[in-house]
Image (cartoon, rainbow, N blue to C red; front, side, top):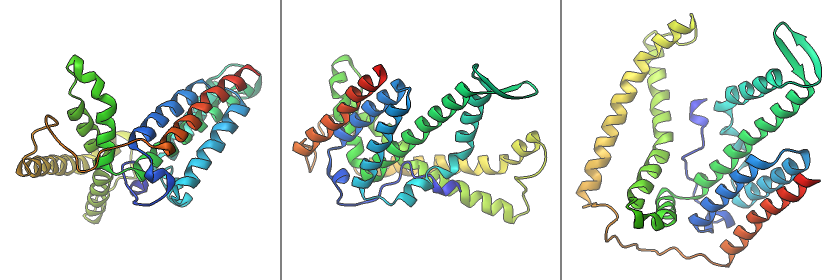
Length: 265
């Protein structure tokens, strides 16, 4: 199940979404995230869901692959829904001890769950359709105005991209370690919570060792290629935003207008 996480993985392709400038996709996600934080009615969520499904279709990424990214997070989704179901005051539907189920709680739980699911979907689409190198360049370009105040844009972009890129690698390492420890008789599913937490030590120790080893190997590889940071670096391909990028940003920005209109209805 752990290996089903799609965030951080890249699927090469020739779709419309693959060909967009990475800066366009990053700015689009920021706009989308802002819209998600403001919408609060069925019509607005319907608009955002239609937009998300359209973008997913343009990416030519299989729906099965996108849904796989939700499987490891099902418990977070259920927990979020349950918390809002039983902690939001309103018109009472039923009560079980200290827990009260309300109409407003059901509404809020569904809306918050949709926010999480839609955000995971869109963020997965970013990494699935953008190579790590392009993502680094895009983040660096967007952060470049901050260089005037001493912010190391290239280094920050590199760190964020490396961290994102190594999510699938660390997950694969975790799965291998769990299988190896299970084969040696380790039990991670039974016992009290404290016992289970203690049983994770044979997983965490080798995982941390492998993570430090990979970090050291990456540092040596970068040094052997004479990597000295972003100062004076040139690029084989310069990023250019074309007509398709302008259209994509206009369409994404129209979500803000639509959210404002539907909020006032």
